Length: 522
Ligand SMILES: [Zn+2]
Ligand SMILES: [Zn+2]
Image (tube, rainbow, N blue to C red; front, top):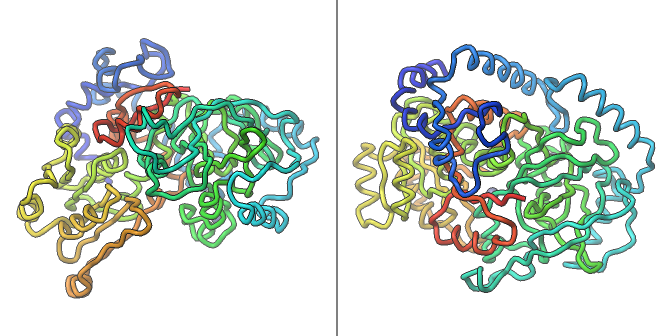
């Protein structure tokens, strides 16, 4: 880290000079338009220019130091916490008192739900799976709000519809019934949700999921109500959604690998919350949750284990990115591959996750960060973000030129496109003894063939990376701190802000490859 810091300090004026032009300091008192984000219709970069404010390199040293000190304390305390449901100790006493009061009120209610993870809950989950999709809703009593509320949400009724989606409209914005939060659940007012390729993969059928399903998994919002058992959040708290909740009690969770939580994987595959229930309904029938979140909606009820609180110094739009794109892309570099300073890196596929991997490579001090894509505009963006070289995978000689440029291939290659072709490119772009990491989600029937002997004779490593091998409660505060310092300028990946009713057209733009991160503002 010392070397990396040195680099940052020494080169900040130049390397981040361009970033500095467009990066916005995040203190709300210097937002000309208030704390909740950028002017509508402006990209992050444009907003920075409009603001005309200095980049992080020219921030007053005292202010910077103070913030660093604060974050160091926060992160240190977060690190000391083992359970994902625990709240960082940095929260104020005032909030604690408020929480205690609230939980006292909630504790007075009797829960009609079985304990999370209990045999009864698991049994009911199993019954629901056997019953299949969209079963008639049974008379399940809820422990939270006594009356359900309405929420407008984007619902997928059929996968594999032809594009353009603006015409076929696979997502219908409908008014759903939303139950109140049950045991260990939270009602959240969604404020911002990113359109991610994983949503598109459900829409086009590459990622088979049960329907009807309310989509959206990358989001941030405000806590409105806590269900029984939730004592470490309170109404008004800001939270980021994490699309893999962690039960805290299964073997992967206990091994410190919550990204592989087994009950969460089962719940996500069957379209339920962590406890096996569905809180969304349409005309009396259940609607499935997408990855325990379903964020293309004004409101959502989610497991407490799907939420990470964050500091109000970040807007909801900024924070939303950290739930998927940042966690997955940066995490692949720092957690899965553990790329050391001075290494060489190639990123194949420059969507939101791939560009975050590129930022991650720059962050850890890789001496070479090579970007590969089919889209020239994305390659230009990668160059502006700091890529040391770019190659268009559509060029017949892209691979030999990359290997020549990096003298036999890179130490670490990242497949971030979700295609077998990209995986093959990444493997061949990796040098002898190097590591190929993939975070792309291909269709389940697609298989990748590898020359067996090359694994052995060249001592290669191939690793999968899911949600950036993240420990979200540890990683999200860390990445947010780096963002505040200007060392992880993820706001430069924001393309546009769109209303819920334009969600189908937004996925057309995402499929066409011309945008990085569009944010639904709700
Ligand atoms: Zn995503
Ligand atoms: Zn678990």
